[in-house]
Image (tube, rainbow over all chains, first blue to last red; front, top):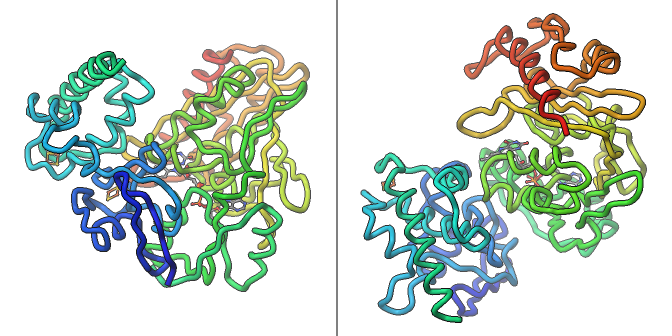
Length: 161
Length: 263
Ligand SMILES: Cc1cc2nc3c(=O)[nH]c(=O)nc-3n(C[C@H](O)[C@H](O)[C@H](O)COP(=O)(O)OP(=O)(O)OC[C@H]3O[C@@H](n4cnc5c(N)ncnc54)[C@H](O)[C@@H]3O)c2cc1C
Ligand code: FES
Ligand code: FES
């Protein structure tokens, strides 16, 4: 067994796990954070995308032990209490989800995009979502959501300043 | 996944020492190794994590070569202003690997050590005449890639960095698999003062050079110097994605586009 301490959504948490435990398993099974989904378990679909030290990664293709000492943000960490994150709000407003299975990964991936490209074009959004698969929406509304979410994130940023 | 022990190496030397354990294996980005372990195709007894080995990271430019540490991620190469300035083709190649999350974890060292016949970096290494620096020696790219998933690396030898000589012009064009973005065919062309080098990935059982095109391009640097017959269908892979004939055809098309795009 190995002791793994990560800061999840701002909270320090430790668990004893086998080295072969995936990061997504640690989050879902040990820490009860089931917002991060497992769609394919083969690094293809992006349902498991979270942020590790601020960068989006596929949590099904990282071991929990590899994240020891890291800071992790999951979909549960985006909202501010009852107030949704602007990207989450944009997915709701633009009908960016149907069954919702891919949505946590889509949102986490989109937030990472906007972190370094505040105003992405439609093509840039489509390219960025290469690793996120949705079997329901046909992507159009997801792209619309990300565009609106990026605009909302720009606004909240200027407000904060 | 079979169970295993896990250790974090402090640096390359430490990692090489830990590798002495029977059936030990290093993990870099884990983008290839972890899926392989999930399928139970790999069964390491000890996984040696290179992520904390700072000596394996970083990008440096000197007068004659660009050096990239083995643990540098695809995203770091793609976004590096140093790489863009020294060899824009290399940055563009890195940006075309997989998807953003694969690029955030996957490393150049892991990619070339793995030598997947459809991987992108081997084409850049071979066409630019790179030198692979290991914990034991320096290996020219021409001697490093040994066919499907095989390299000149010894069992406990690690890639520490890759040195790329500076080309006058270079470009990489690939015909990606629409699902994975691995190359169905990818061609890297590099023009130096005294030679031209052309490397092809994805098409055959391993990355290879095309001497006929290199000679033709050295005489005349132009897309029409690429003659279709130089790459034979008999030497190509054939699978559900593309037949051997189609791959042979794509080689010439990608090579022409690469020459036209080279900067
Ligand atoms: C969905 C998906 C899409 C992808 N698409 C592409 C693509 O379009 N093009 C492409 O080229 N690749 C693609 N890849 C592969 C990706 O680039 C990997 O990152 C790469 O092949 C392996 O790098 P890694 O750092 O993840 O290595 P790991 O998976 O950690 O290791 C791979 C192998 O190399 C060994 N190794 C690692 N580092 C070293 C070292 N420094 N010295 C010696 N041995 C070492 C390991 O022991 C292991 O055997 C894709 C992967 C995925 C999951
Ligand atoms: S579950 Fe991780 S990519 Fe599909
Ligand atoms: S909304 Fe159902 S998979 Fe995307």
